[in-house]
Length: 191
Image (tube, rainbow, N blue to C red):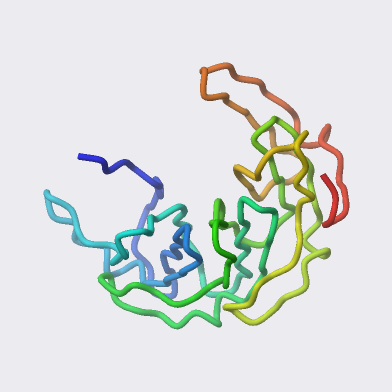
């Protein structure tokens, strides 16, 4: 009761050198070798240990060569090297990925690509990865979206390219499909 699916990771094989990178809303990140999930029991396996006030928000398959980007609802963002996060076992909690302010929370984790950021009131923009300099894990990050009454909080971020299309779905079930090429590429500190 109260639990829901956070991520679906399609896999063909469990290879050495590949990891599951996880992020929580309180800014913790965790990297575990994919091999540790090769033999899943019928009732499942523990993937991460969470504090009572925390929850898993994103899981990605990685190869230890990428940069990780965390985005918060207040429009902050941090980019750091995946190698800054040491590999740990399935039941560990992880380490601090981003130091977030009170009342803020991580809403998305993505790997290096152009970043599409969308706010609660339907506003969105693409920002080039070059706008985000690499920092050390655990920092405050930089502004990545200018929050106003018109925009609302950031609700999600996705790695996209020119060829992608995105579908935005409201809480009432209304859907719109947009080509990423039609979404403006704007600077880091814009709405």
